[in-house]
Amino acid sequence: MELSLIIAVAAVAIFSVFITPKAKSNGAFFNGLSPKGKPPGLLMLTFSQVTTWIFARSLLNAAILGFYYGIWGTVAYATYYLSFLTGAKIIDSVRFKHGFGSIQAFLTDRFGQWGTQCYNFVVGIRLVSEVFANILVIGILFGVAGSSSYTLAVALFAIVTLVYSMLGGLHASLRTDLFQMILFLIVLTALTILVLTTGHLNTATLMFKSFTITDPGPILILVALLQVWSYPMHDPVMMDRGFLADRETTRKSFHHAAWISAACIIIFGSFGIVAGANAGSGETMNQVLMRLLGENPMLLFNITLVISAMSTLDSTLSSASKLVAVDMKWIEPSRTNGRITMAVFVMLGLLLVFWGNKDLFSAVAVSGTASMYLAPVIFFSLWGNRTDIPLWSYLGSFAIAIAGAALYFTESAGHSQLLGESHKYTKLLFISLTVLVGGCLLFWAGMVSQKQQPRFSSTSTG
Image 1 (tube, helix red, strand yellow):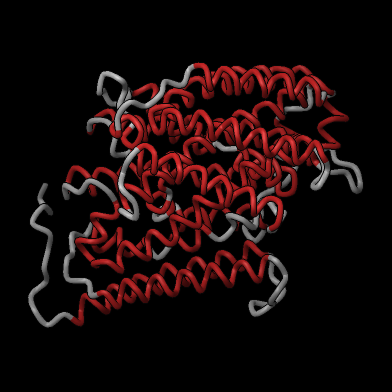
Image 2 (cartoon, helix red, strand yellow):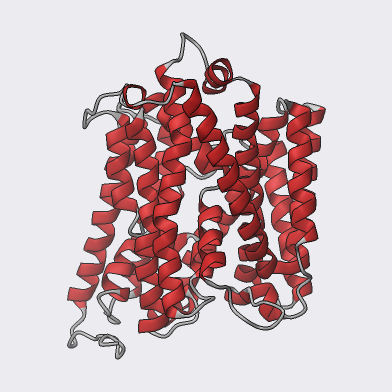
């Protein structure tokens, strides 16, 4: 199967490079404009949204949560894709209601330099972790960490994806996303049909775990419902795609991406549920699936992971170059500097893979919690149109969220037990609720502390 997977990966990589046009302007490289200067259409934008969010780590997470916690674990992960609906509302408010050209511009207007510095810190960590996580998936598929096949797969995957990303920037990412999403849907459909023909995918199997509100699956659903309000705003890949097309195309792309992504996650997660329902003592998910399905379906299973990893990595690199050159303004926004930035982020990701934590989940487990400092920003400053929230409220919310994220990391990794012996998702629910309520209270207190009349944005009726 490994040889077949190598051939499949090589074919996808070569074709991705082949269809990538070289960016001839900064507009194409940073803003996704076509060679004729046109923004992406609805299909391209929707598929790009979907394929960059159902990345390899997400597919694995959905399947593994299904393996351990049944359908409720997979549904919990799919709940995060409601972020497309809240993300659409955030983009519509920032861009079309308040008239800002980026999230950073909005935060600077409301909270000055500290507004963007806190945001860029969280976003930068997320981008590096996404590069790391998607490169790591490839290594896991091809060999044991440290083996020659592992090292070669990781290096080649990173180099090939970096090459076509550097050629075309964001426009190349959008173009290859369209191709990779179509291919992903074909492979996922074929895999689903093969699994259905085995007879293992049925209602009884899907419901092998009963619903108990205190179980990890239902608890994680509650966590997701708390985090989806702020999660999209800290994801630069999603936010970047909200500033490319006209208002109607943008709105429709987000709404369609929500149901398509959730459907793909649930379908792929159901394979993990099948494995969990049929697992013997000590068997891993992959071992069960290989026993139940055989080599051909498992080849398709792995191909879907490779395609999604490649698509996410190129999108992450294009967002990283835009973040550093355009949004943070650390360097001149030229194509050369954008390409250098991409290379730096790939190097950082590779360093984490070869030297850092090998746990796929710890790289990004805290991002949702860290993003929750933005929830009161969205509720009060963005949707509530308040311009009188003091800086200390913003910084306090940021501090609480970072502390909560750090606490969850240490608790889930076993480095501390400050929250007792509860399951890590129960702890995450408590932390998320505390961060959300604490941040909102700080914004409310800051609003009340202002002596003058409440100040609303002049665009509040837009």
